[in-house]
Image 1 (tube, rainbow, N blue to C red):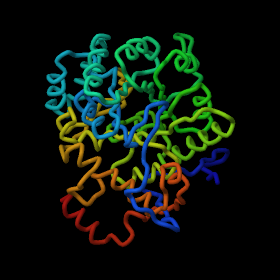
Image 2 (image 1 turned 180 degrees about the vertical axis):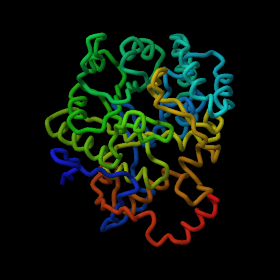
Image 3 (image 1 turned 60 degrees about the horizontal axis):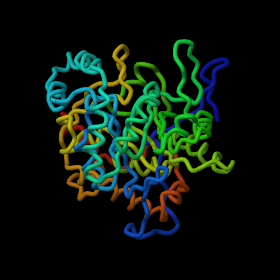
Image 4 (image 1 turned 90 degrees about the vertical axis):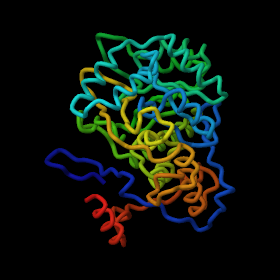
Length: 386
């Protein structure tokens, strides 16, 4: 039901991860007997978790390590890895820059042109290790880079903008034709980002293999503050999942829905999947992995903008190995490690054998779910903050 904001202006209530909870099922299932595989086009992943195409998270080395564990780390083709030969030195500059200078430094560094030979080189570095390779670029460069990416051997092509639509109006440049891009691509094409039912439905009609859901929820993203746009992730995921359902019912091909951003702990991931996602894309948690290239820092918008920055560097620290974050065993009790364990356990409690069944899990609106009965935990957190 819409809420009246003022005369002639109404708004729909939307929900984020902290406002909902999963309801246990009538039966429970052994977590070891649960299937959590993720399929994107013809690409089959044992782990339904992707690492975001952000420079503080993914370089070629991280992509290889993520792939060996069954997930997919997406390399940003518009990032520093494809602008500089000696990328390690650039990472050190960003990590060591004082806070008051870092945004200016990032603007300067991202003015260096992307080099096609580095795109091919980074993809080759990943593929020679025998893992799945996902790469991301902006709509403006998607057509031009497609032959380079295909020839180098990438497996999944992500096209990401702050907000993506199937129709775009401009007198100064030509809009990317997603249907034509898909037709020309031998790789599955995943597009994002999208948070609205009708936009998602129209994008699915172009033949894309997947859609990323989320505008501005990421820890290092400032889009919601700079532009004032976004939809909380539970509602956004449910709306795009509804579009996927209607698209399939109308005879469309399968489309993978991936919730992108805003997840800090395992409970957020399980709620994203129960809201309708087939998989999730995460940034800040993986930026804290020992294998991450950012030295404990997180930054790197998938769509950098030198004139109106919508991302910043944040300090996340180095907290665990990538294996511990994904597979455990967890060394902490806050849900920030062993994401696969959290997924399988939640699915088992909710009686879901597959992610598709998990998407049917009942959710309740529960704004007190994280605070109810947690007096001593809250007191301890306040003490630690001091």
